[in-house]
Length: 358
Image (cartoon, rainbow, N blue to C red; front, side, top):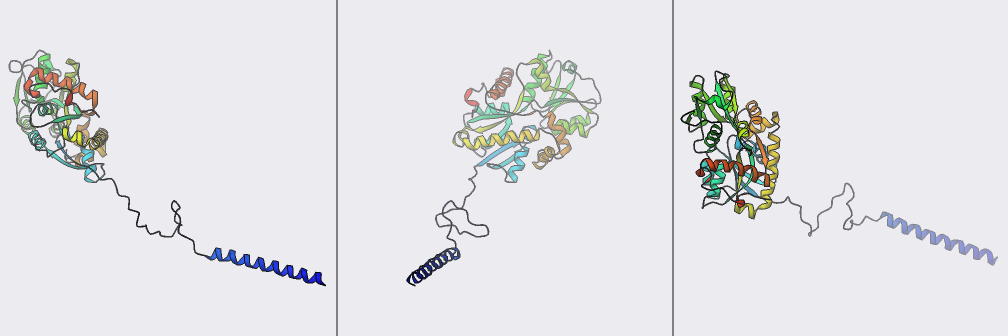
């Protein structure tokens, strides 16, 4: 009898222990979840209020960069960059001005209005030799962009065929004059006695000469040359002056570049290097000469119509050249210009400090 009582007491004790354990598990399961510890994710659907120690992640502050580009071929390669800047898609915060007169760009660089500018290469050299502004060339953007056009005929097929002709052109005292005279000279022709050259102040004046002169011959840069051939169907491309240069010279012909104020290059080097990356990408995009490139050129207000832009791009010889290759190519062109007239490059050839190196 005692044994039965002891067994019954033991069973009851066991049941009590099991009941208590079940209550403990239930209480743990029903309790609300604690907030996740650091490094744990918040469950889906729940909202976690930021702690007082957390701060929102903000985008890196962009550097403001003031850029001037010339209308025409010198500014053509920047078209995609200009469009991207308007849409806020660039790594720098660009303020870009498109200017037709290089003297305005020179004045802006002297005043510190621009950090960067696209310019003819001889103007860049002149700036470097001026005492009141300190610049470096950071990239080349175009090779040769000059073409001899002929209206109403096909009498000009070589440089020798220019003998006894009158040529309307622009660029007196600038690279077009020196390039034309150098090519003529190396082919045995002299301005004045063999070839008459009539300089005009603007390309539009040359277009007027072509329009109103029978059998007119003119030398114009891109994209103006393309515009003329589209407007006047009897005007054709007669000579590519870049190809003619290549026949008589060991160095490439280059006409356009980008310069930076030296203070900008040294104090904001990271921003400059970002610009060079974006500028290179812009030139590569435009060089495709497809519809997207044509539309970008129009949106950038460099050329008014996409079909003309698409036709002009392949003849504009857009390039991106930097570093040692830039120094070699530009040095060769400047040496020829200096030999023709030292004043064309500011009286002396720029030294090595002229050339920016990353």
